[in-house]
Image (cartoon, rainbow, N blue to C red):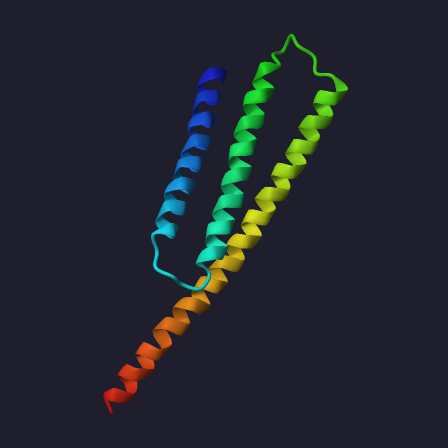
Length: 122
């Protein structure tokens, strides 16, 4: 049962990475719009944090229950998890900024169109 849980957890993580890569590819295919760079940056930072956590988990699997980690290994683990947590928060903040930038960019593209349609109809 424990092995099955690990398999599902791995599939979930790989699915998230695959979804981020697909989203990044989709965003890069958009035409130029304000906020696109912020969204690409947010996706890249979040993707690097997710890949880093996968690599860290694979490294942790090398230490089985019979092996004891030394103090240097624990320090490396704590530093790595701190950096990955910081990258994850940075990605979330960049994503929020990107959403507001894209919203403003779309409003500026749509507003002249609506203003022109409104004045032409009168």
